[in-house]
Image (cartoon, rainbow, N blue to C red; front, side, top):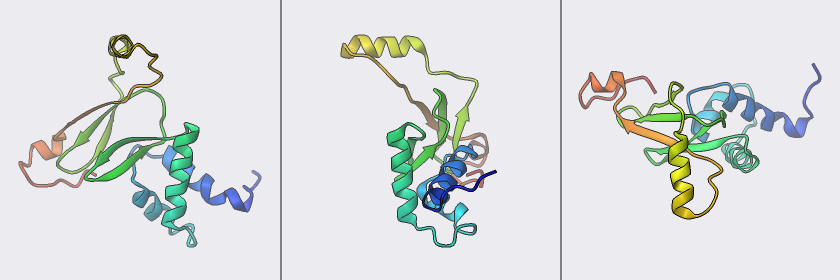
Length: 138
């Protein structure tokens, strides 16, 4: 396999990390995950590339959890659950964004819906069993 040109090595590593996880990481989580393999990686580089990936349609910001943006490398339409106890972001692969809701949105705005992000929030299974304590699933 041919090595990526040096100027794209970090960018490719960030995208690969984002697309290989279902964790829905923040920029800080991506940075911490890649820093051991790429010692000269900066947090600014991670932020710039995540924003570039959003612009290119390669990633999306799916939620702001406890004031921190969380990213997803899976850009196909799918539903998320955000735990308000442990901050976990979970794909609900069994559910799809309802087409009738998208059609209703088009009717309301008179335009064309080109995307839909649906997220639920509440307590995950682990947190709902612990009361107000935070769990370690995130």
